[in-house]
Amino acid sequence: ANMSAEGDYGRRYDILPPEQNNLRAAIDWSLAAGEIELGLRLAVALEYFWVITDPFEGERRFEALLAQSDQIDPLLRARALRCYSGSCHVAGNFEQSRQAIEQSLALFQAAGEEQGIAVLLHRLAMSKLATGENGARELLEESLQLFRRHGSPRGEGESIGALGYVERKEGNLERALELFEASAAIVGPLGFTWWEQGMLGEIAETSLLLGRVDDAEPPARQALALAAEIGDRQHTLYFLGLLAWIAAEGGNLARAGRLWGAVEAEEENGPVGNWETERAQYAERVFAHEGPELERSLAEGRLLSFEAAIAQALRESQEPAAGGFVRPARSAGRGEH
Image (tube, rainbow, N blue to C red; front, side):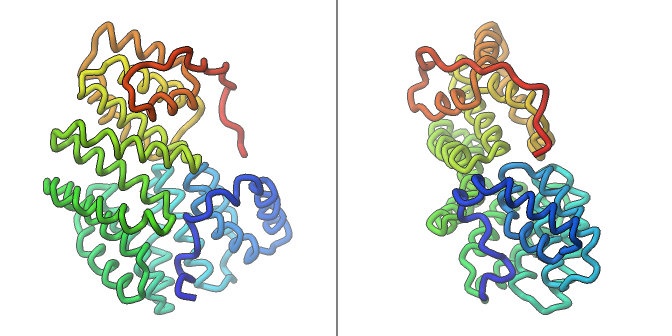
C-alpha cells in the first residue's frame, strides 16, 4: 500500500519484453471496448517499459486512453498523467510533459495523497531543470522531506540525485558529484536500474567537467552496461556519446571516432527523444579534435552494428576489436510497434 502512488515501476526489466505484444493488444482491446479503467491500469503498469524502449509509443498510448478518462477514478487518472508526463519528458516534449505534471499534481493534492505529491514535485523540478527555469531546489527539498516521511528510499534517492543537477547548474561540481554518488548508492541495491544508470552517467560527466578524465571512464562504462542490459536505446546512445567524449579528451581519437560513428549510424534508425535536444554538447567535445584520424575512425564506427559498438565501448582496452561485426543494412525506419 505504501507504494501505491509510485507503483512498482522501474524494477523488473525481464518480465515485459516477451509479453509486450499481448499487452499492446490488451490495451487496444480496452480502448475499443470502452474499458478505459482496465486500459489505464495496464498502461500505468508499463510506465517504465515505454520510458526505456519507446517514449513516443508511451505518449500515443496514454493520449488515446486519457482522452476518454473523464469518468475514471481521479487517483488512477493522476497516475496515468504522471506516466504520460514521463514519456513526454523522455521524448523531449517538455511542454506537454509540464502540462501533464501540473494536472497530475493537482489531482494528488486534491486527494491528499502525499506519496503521489512527492513524486510529482520531483517531476516538476526535473521539468524546470530541463527548461532552464529556477525553483527546482525548493521543490526537491519538499519532495525529499515527503519521501523521508513516508519511508520511500527510492524517492529519496531520486530527489538527492536531482539536487545534484541543481548544484551542477549552479557551478558546485564537487557537491554535485557527491550527491550523484549518494543517489546511485541508494537506488542501485533497490533494483531501480533506470535511475542508477543516469546517476553513473552524471558521475562520469561531472568528473570530466572537473578535468578528471581517468575517473570518468569506469562509471561511464558501468552506465553503458546497465543501459544495454535493460534495452534502453536512448541512454545507450548518451553513454556511447559520453565515452566518445572521454576518449577524445584522453587523446584516443580512434576510439572516440568509432564510438561517435556508431552513434550517428544508430540515429538513422529513427528519432530517439531527449537526446536530440542535448547531442550537440557531446558532438562539440568530440569534434574539438577534428582531423584525419577522427574522420577515418568515424567512417569505421558508422559500419559497426550497435551491439558491436557497445561491446567495444565496454572493453577496458582502448584497442579496436579484431574483426568487429559489421552493421547489417538498415531498414527505412522503425516500425510503429
